[in-house]
Length: 399
Image (cartoon, helix red, strand yellow):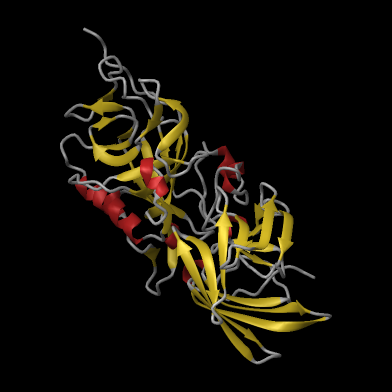
């Protein structure tokens, strides 16, 4: 059978005659129609998606309409309930891949194991449940996983279409726009089909942010300042995107301090916590604070995700580093800090706040300290920032 589908709105999969799918804004499905195996023959199946929490399945031959309610926790599907009252519970691993499916009595309905990039290694029990690798929906007609913005083929560990976000020149993993999670599927997952939303270059002190909700592959890129930024995207009179917009912020630093004139330096002797943030990928998530200006948490995307600690990196006391943030200010203990000693850049910062508040978000668990023992605590995940470049902040000269 030839793989593919028909997409009036998004061209994210090659054509085929096996099924039809409609996709609405931001890549979410509204309808799926397919021919599925049934005994010695086949049957026509149609699924409607009023929302991610609710699905309707229609079997044409039987003239039967069934409903399924999905239960989510921190953005991950944890249970499904049909109209007869039967419930299935999904137990997941460190990257939210479904490993066990249990019924109400705790009996195993299905058990799965996966290769690192998502091929099914072992599956015992019923195969009727859609969420599998990364808790994404597997289309058995194509053996592709549906990641909202794109389809993913676990057999070749590649997306079927190019990422609409093009990483910076220093991000060598991002040069391949079909690759999955920068080549590290054991630690990372990609819930939306996109990976990098922002980048911070320590060499030139530049931060770039892209809102993928208003980004279209193939359009020219336009880098703009905060005062030039157009919310909702740069569009023509008909509402069509004409450019891919990238917010650029200058005078951004990590590990140091700024004087009143905006000159950035480092005083490691008197303040050893003025260490730059290590290169790598960081989750950009909500941060609860009483400060006058909004801050954001930068959570290292390491093997213990969302716990606020950076495994393998030590502070001046020999303890595991933690507490990276993204904020305005004149002092940085490893945070990505927009230099603002005289509090003159709050207008720029409000542009950042508005972008993040209006972009697509998912819920992720709070896992720092004792919060990891409370299963229903969560916060907003906005995307990721990749830190690149060489640190070149100079130490203060001793007099």
